Each structure stands twice: as structure tokens, then as C-alpha cells.
Length: 158
Image (cartoon, rainbow, N blue to C red; front, side):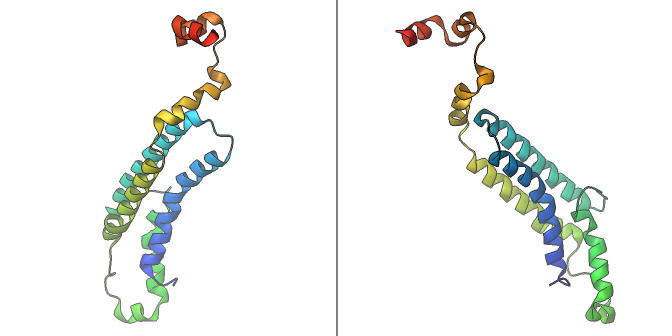
């Protein structure tokens, strides 16, 4: 399995892709302010879109020190040096880094973005939880009237 170039490249892609997802998952498992979930989802989606662009640049030959995916070519060279068959053939790789980025890395990240956006498509519901966040409680009755309106406050008090 360690001599399978596509498996090694897929593992590198998953390492890069799951790092921001792990941070988001840790947030969801901690003290969650539901009103911030939409912001966190948006930040995660932005990071994943950025990752797509980085994968494409690596596929075009640019180095990106922060990505595991940028090390795939050196991993592939090591596999070529270690396998008997490739010593005899020494032919070009069956797939290039550019092809792998376009055919595997980019589509899998877009798929993840779709899954995240579908899973957290309830912004109005999450926004209503702001009532329970003590940071949103007004300091004075005048602020309450300004925020909720005098008619609603009177109806509420009655």
C-alpha cells in the first residue's frame, strides 16, 4: 500500500483538507455560542476554497511549504527509487501531480464544502439563539426599547 502513489497523494490531500475541519469540529464540541456558528462555517468554507486554489497552484508546479500535498512528488520519487518494477521501467508516472490535483484533490474539497454548507443551512434558527448569549443583553431599559421597540416591550411586560 505504501508503494501506491495515488494512495499516498490521497493521504496528503486528506491531511491538508481535514486540518481546518478538525479545528471546526473542536469548536463544535466545546463551549458553542450558536450565534457564532454561521461565522465559523463561513470561515471554514473560506479556508476550504483557499485550499482549492493552493492545490491547483501545487498542481501547476508551485511550491507551498504549508501543504502536505506539495510533498507528494518527492514521495513519488521515493516510491520509484524503492520499487523493483519502477527501477526496471523508469517510465513517467501514470498520473501527474497536476492531474491528481484536478481529478481528486479539488473535487473532494468542493464536495466537502457542499456537505458543510448543507449541514449548517439554518442561519435564522441559529441566529435566534442570540437571546441566550449574555453579551447581547442590553445594559439599560432605554437600550431594550431601542432594540426591541416600545410596543413590543409593553406587550411583553403586560
